[in-house]
Image (cartoon, rainbow, N blue to C red; front, side):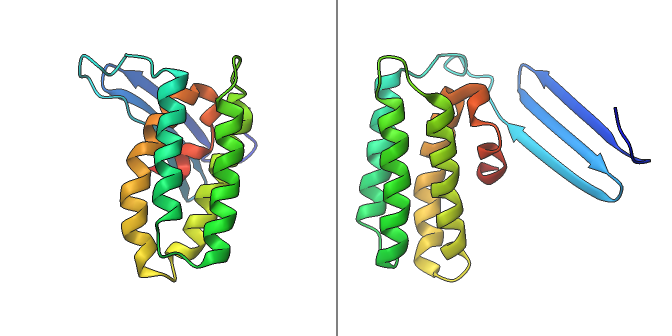
Length: 146
């Protein structure tokens, strides 16, 4: 399964969460999807609640002091994710791809604009809830949320 010496893939799950870790040579990459051990931890978020969270993120972005071009790009990805979510049969994979693009857009400016750091503190907890709802479709989105 592994071609290089030192390659390890580890996946652990339990009552307190899920952790995946991959080691390739000297590089370590850890991805965590954390689910708390509270009574509400296993409560499935509804599609309507996921859409409401995305709407809340949209309002935060629109009211932010981000550069206009960044704000427009991030909101466009978010709207596409919201449309994919707000269907009778949600297209979770499409929503996840667009949310990942939105996060990458925000990360790009995060390094250069101080205002975006405060913005990320507001957006990240909401995105984590949506990512849990997306389940396995969230995939690599988790690497940007941890």
